[in-house]
Amino acid sequence: MAFNDVLESIGGVGRFQISQVIFLVIPVCLIACHNFLQNFTAAVPDYHCKPSIQSNQTFLSNITAEEGTLLKAFIPMGRNQKPEKCLQFATIQWHLLNPNATVTENVTERHTQPCVGGWEYDTTVFESTIVSEWDLVCDLQMLRDLAQSIYMAGVLAGAVVFGALSDRFGRRITLILSYLQIAITGTSTAFLPSFSSYCVFRFMAGMTFSGIVLNSFSLILEWTPTKGRTVAGACLGYFVTFGQVILAGVAYKIRNWRWLQLAVSAPFFIAFLCSWKLPESPRWLLLHNKSHLAIRNLKKVAAINGKKKEGDKITQQVLNSHMQTETAKLKSSHTIFDLFRTPALRRVTCCLMVIWFSSAFSYYGLAMDVQKFGLNIYVVQMIFGALDLPAVMLSTFTMIFVGCRITIAGFFTVGGLMVLVNMLVPEELQTLRTAQAAIGKGCLASSFIGAYQYSGELYPTEIRQTGMGFVSMQARIGAMVAPFIYVLKDSFPILPSLMFGAAPLLAGIITCFLMETRRSPLLETIAEMEQRARKVQQMKEEEISLQQQATAHSKESV
Image 1 (cartoon, rainbow, N blue to C red):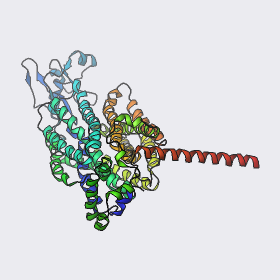
Image 2: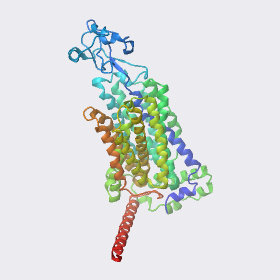
Image 3: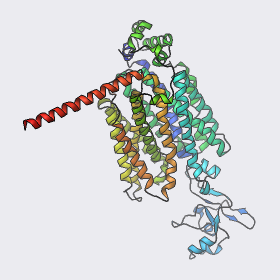
Image 4: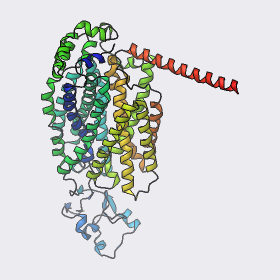
């Protein structure tokens, strides 16, 4: 008998499970805003060199491109008659103020130099960003991508740290500490004076993404019976996606990066104060020989679900009869090396490493640079978030009625093909390119959310957090690498799209090598996982044998 029967007896998907999901998904929505925050806080406004008269180093800060012709004497114009971003004339070219004057290529190269007096930024769209405040342009433009990669490095570190802490000390306390850390570091970031300190605090904020998402998912998964597991887990995905839509609206209203940073960070203080009432996972308590606490929590949940009589019947003997092996014999902690200890666990881990890396690599490659589409950045962000919602909903239904394996493989394949087809669309058709990219991103989002669900169901409770923490590390590595792929675009224009499209196709193929978990109870131990894998392999061998026999009989009859 499985522990799932205990959850069914105290109400199944009842009032407690619904209220728990509602509480946990709100902070997940906010932490998703942090993931995409640099689309706005690190947006690159139009800019050009600050015009200067070099003889007395007087900077003419009131001259702008829109005010017309005077700027031409200080800054060379590009092919589209807009000021060059990183060059200015070494000497003032007054003759260029003549409407009929032109600048030859040789003269431009001979009389230009890098900006010496700083830059002027257009504040029409963005009041301020970290780019305009710390001049992360021209030779320093790589620092913008570096900041996002440092944040993702924090997410990677958080997957290791919080994954281990969760398995050792519990899901609840790790989640509470994650709320406190993002509240402090996120709010402090809004007041930092330098780019280096900004990167340090963004790293610490990134760590909490893993702590919040992984532990919220585990609490939902381990308190929900099998029949409601897929929908409950998908709700987490909906609010990760909905967070992108919320971010677009908040960023539209708040154009100053410091106030925007504060707006999406301060609410976590409320989450921290309210989270102390969350009950710990009974599965974790049982596996760590704390059955008295598990019984207490189960009785509380039974009362909330209106099943107090059934809750009163729960005893140590009842729980032991519903666990498939004695919990006292289980290891209380595991290391990453344990993920490769047995054949089935090793196969699952290796496949999930590829799946998580590919999904994050392509997903963030598309999502983290919405300015490249040349349309209104707020509209593009809204579209990207809005189209993810129906895609995630569709994947939820297919995971329920078809299964996780086929669903994830299918969405990976469609997402990869959309990215590759987008390479063939001319750059002039920005609307079509944006629509295709949004559809592809929606498919990748569905696969990404499905990977959370699928990984949680593949790994047994005994090592679930360690496993999910490790495979999610691969996603963070993919997210760290993705921004730097665009650096290669000048030398190899098709390379980014080619890589972002090929990775999901590879992940789709790899997914087919995993077991289906549809309508299967959560595994508790590694031994159960190995036993199930052997049964699946035996069934496949029997099926192949029957097919061969049928083929042989048909040949004999002929």
